Length: 292
Ligand code: PMP
Image (cartoon, rainbow, N blue to C red):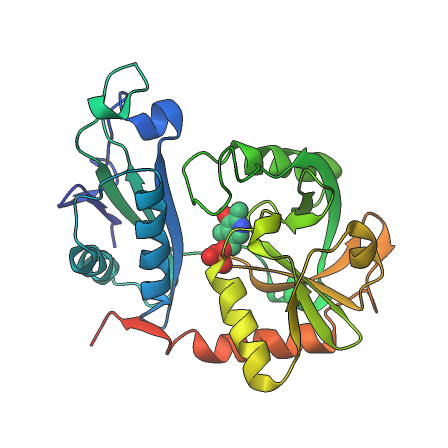
């Protein structure tokens, strides 16, 4: 079945899904986005993703031309038209077409597009054996420049981290903030476990307020693991019993090695494995059902 893309109120083919070269998302990274998963016809944490999208929009004074309800309806309809049960949704709102100047007043109408695709970034083997990763020299954007809480189209900070990960031959890397505390991965949040306690950096350390991160904190509280949101350093990562990343695409993926230090037993540890199992038990029920 041919892919159907939502573009500014219309459902078009992949070939017809074109945006202007004057679009400020393209020219300046001026816009915002969300990556969302669909599990068994359920748009996982749909409300949380839309809340983050509208918060990002408010922060950068971008007026989304769809109401919250219209946006949710467009998400559901795009998934339905693609007849997908499981997949990934990329929702993008750019400042829209303008001129070559950066003034957003010249882009009066934001552009909205929704792409739905199949997705599997890691093999099941990776979830069991964990990832090799390195720390990189690229530091997280500081909140008084481009605040990491804004899920903006300007992902150069993260792309520079990804380039360093690629050069090191690993799939994901650990990024510190400008004070030397661990912030997050290139596009995932990070957790460490020490003596049964689960730690993740607070968002003021440069972490995006990840939807998966919040889901994992909630699960920990429900199943009885103590969670602490507090700053930690690379040393704490090296000596952790378990380390894992969370993200919409990655879900909950263990780390087996950081900067040539083996983490725990060198594979997904018991708490990480438990959290992944609990996470996977809610993904097809917590959200918005597409095929009601
Ligand atoms: N940090 C960054 C920089 C991200 O881009 C993402 C999204 N992939 C995450 C963390 C994880 O957030 P979420 O769980 O909402 O996907």
